[in-house]
Amino acid sequence: MRSLISLASAAAALLSAVQAAHFEVTVGKNNQLKFDPETLVANRGDTITYTFFSKNHSVTQSSFDSPCAPVPAGFFSAFTPSPSDTNPSTTTFTITLNDTKPIWVFCGQGNHCQQGMLHSINPPPSGNRFEAFREKAKSAGPSTSPPDGLPIGGKRIARVEVGAAGALTFSPNDLKEPVGTVVEFAFNPRNHSVTQSSFDKPCQPSQNGFSSGLIPTALSPSGVTFSILVADTKPIWFYCAQTTGMHCQKGMLGAVNAPSSGNTLAAFTDLASKAPPSTLPPQAPLGGILSVNGTVLRTSSSPVIDTSSASTDSVYMTSKAGGSPVANWNFGGNISDSAVERLQLSVVIDGVLLRILATGYENLRPGGSWAGTYPDTLVEVIGTMAAQSYIHRTSSSDPLSHFSRPVPSDCAYAAPLPSADAFLSVALAVLLLDIGLVADSAAALAASDPWLVPALVTSLGARARMAGVVDMMQNHVAAAAPREVAIPAELVYSYIMHHYVSSCPDKLAWDRPFAKLSVKGKDMDMAQRTVSVELEWEGKQDGDLFAAWLGPWGDVKFSPIVNKKAAVPDGLYGHVWVVVTSKKDIKGSEIPGATVAGPEMVWVTQP
View (cartoon, one colour):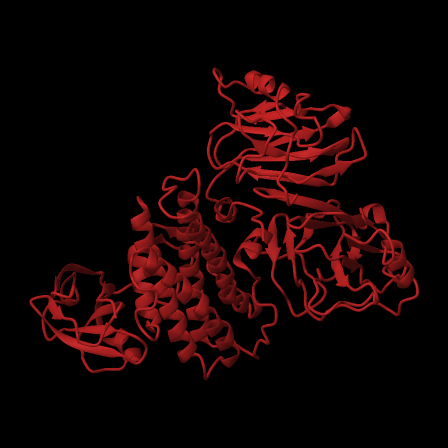
């Protein structure tokens, strides 16, 4: 699947990390072969939206030396026809700037480029000026475009008005869009839905299809949109499922990429006029992103959507992650206090992880501070990991919202990342804490909240793969132990608060973290195995103290601390967690009750 948006920019927007400017550029307005403005000056993080008029144009990135040929890995809007000289196409293309280097753009239609249909962002004031770019284009060879014709490097959005001016219509209702386009349905007053069907059953939901649910609104514009992704070239059929007034049967239908003969939109509409009463899936939204003024509503157990409450999300995050949040929870009758405490902590940790991974991705990709450090394939994996961490966070926030329990607000994070190496170290520590908490929670909540366990355990594989990728980037084996380390929630909270969070607006279950633990030194044997560590902490120093070593689940070992030094027990591999305790030979679940300081992560050895 082609990338639709810079995930770093999406994450920055979701986390309100930057304030960016937005620019509008018209393409071919008033039947002129012209971008307007032809040049503009913009900063990193700014967005530029291109709107299309007259004929059939494209927005294609080129280079100064080859004005009318696409640059490898550059952005391309795909061709966008528009019949009007003055009214823009309902399809737009938006890019986000990753740096302030000059960007050169042309229209790839016919000889439009050679006739001066050119554009530049941040052109130099001297030397390779825009005027020189235009002169080069006059003598350029025939224009070319990416051979697959698909949009890349930006957001191609086709907007459809739902029930505009009170009419029972989708406008436009017969879209022709390439793979990679996001179709955005904008809701108008009354009460409509966008529901996927099949050609043969126009007014019935298709299995595993999308559905916005019924959206009652009295505002115009309402700010409510439902977005789907055109994933392949097959026709997409949709209808409004409102039974009051028989909207589907009266022609409130549409299609994306319907055939021009045979199963046409007209034939689809004719079948709908004779169809039985419409139905809706029992849950919504499904298969797309329902946004309210830029924020998103989660899947609910009702097909009628209350648009007054929303949380932050993005269709691009879902696409980048390779999947959406849990759609069918099968919530139990209640939720335990222990589950609430653990889920609230998970929301905080996944917020930390999202910030770290998105920052790393932004810095590793072209134009970033660490660009070129790793191959592009690995960099894109980091982007996918950031998106998946966002999806994982919903597995904690959704149950809290369902049971009307507080969802923690974003904390103030304190995780400086001065280099790619620092980024990997921090990302791995948070990933392993995240995995440890999920593993511990799945075991602790199996009896009290069994409905929650499937969502927790099915995310462990993705989280472990993330840790494996970072391990390999640090020249460690991807899986250094046969099981994950389960880390009690109190210890996870303690580490996160000491290392990555400066403050939180909402109080969590634990009053304060344990004393901070540091590994001051390590002793290694000839095989480069860590055999002992020197520990440092504030607080209790007297009496019998022990190092509790949390290894793979079911493997907790102890060694005495003498002069702040502790031996690493045999049989441990990879990353383990050490905790200073006042007791030994106790269960893992009992360690928080005996903790003096910690935890801290220690790399022992390769298996």
